[in-house]
Amino acid sequence: MICVSIGRSRHKHMMIEHKHLVEQGAELVELRLDYVTARVNIQRLLKDRPSKVIVTVRREQDGGKFTGTEEQRRVILREAIAMGVEYIDLEEDIADEIPRFGTTKRIISYHNFRKTPEKLRDLHTRLAAKDADIVKIATMAHNPHDNLQMLEMIQQSEIPTVGMCMGDIGTPSRILAPKFRAPFVYATFHHERALAPGQLSYDQMVQVYRHNEINEETEVYGVIADPVAHSLSPQIHNAAFAAAGINAIYVPFRVQVDALDQFVEDVTRMEVRGLSVTIPHKESIARQLTKVDPAVKGIGAVNTVLFKDNEVLGYNTDYKAAMDSLENALGGVGKRPSPLKGKRVLVMGAGGVARAIMYGLQQREAIVCVASRTRARADALAEAFGATALEWSARHGQDVESIINCTPVGMHPNVDDSPYDKAHFRPGMVVFDTVYNPESTLLLKEARARGCEIITGVEMFIRQAALQYFLFTGKEAPTQLMRDTLKRVIGPVKF
Image (cartoon, rainbow, N blue to C red; front, top):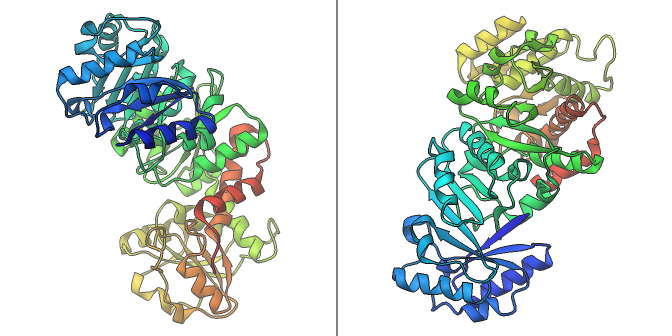
């Protein structure tokens, strides 16, 4: 179940939002009365409430906004109990001074906006002893391991426990809470009005993560990156799982470089079955793999990992997706010889995506030159795949038939940037941009205007995601649904 937190300065707005949420299907709402600027009128807020309610009056020291006296705050809490509110939120230090009364259930809460304490079990025991019906613990995450500690604490607790790690590193603890037997989890009314760091909106929880369908049998997949908030993979894969009726969830995991090894150790305890891997982990995760497919050996980078039968299996779906996108534009997916054979290609960039594409081009016997803003990286990539390295400033002087952008230049929000000067496009060139947000990058707009054949990053993104979906599930992906979902999220194409 999702508890939606409402924090508004006026009673009227709080009541309107409460009614709206119930119409949208919300069953439990937290009224954050510390946000109310006028004198709180408990009777007005609770008399004809349309759903079950948690009343919370959070002090500033606990991350709230209440600026009145402590006695005034306790009066509000006692009035709410007298009105028969379903739940009351009490911090540990005042729990003994607010006695149980009637049917109101007691949530004994703890908030730490600095860190996640190491001994969560000891903390939980202390809170539970305060005549708790529910224990609530919210702490700041600085490491992905904090999520595992929190989720296992929830799972192992005899008293119903709501636990969450705050911040974007802590997002998995919110999404996966019902799998680990949390009675409910908190969300905000709107994604731009989070009442705690990293809090997701009600719509995100319901529409993207299908939160009310998650149970102990739900399979877990996800994407690891740093940063990860920009990733659109959760929308794509979760939409595909929903359409196929698969009991699975796809979660964004923000994993720092120095936390990767510990995270891979933790995933089996979190029951993660597969991962998409992106920047900055595509190369470094290789040390954790027990088996790899041939493409991974050739590329030296991984974008998909499966955890199966005590094995950590590595794959790369980027190169196949990119080659299929190119060959499709040239009229011959899977043909032998490839229509890329003998084609002169400029690759811009020298990161993980570039490595995958260089491998594919080498396999198809294209003639490749590579330019990177860091010449040493271009040299290393060219040597690895039998290509020619260029200075970044020399990229426009090449007689090529195809141009592939593997840099982030032009990615949202820097949509007015392009890695290639439009004056050098020629009609008939194939121009491929691996950036998919936006789909209509400046590079592609200018290329199309000059008669070039264009390939968008959406095409590659959907193809690689479909291949990942097959690895995850063993089933063919609903590619059109995935494509429609992505385009809806990033907005309409405007060439």
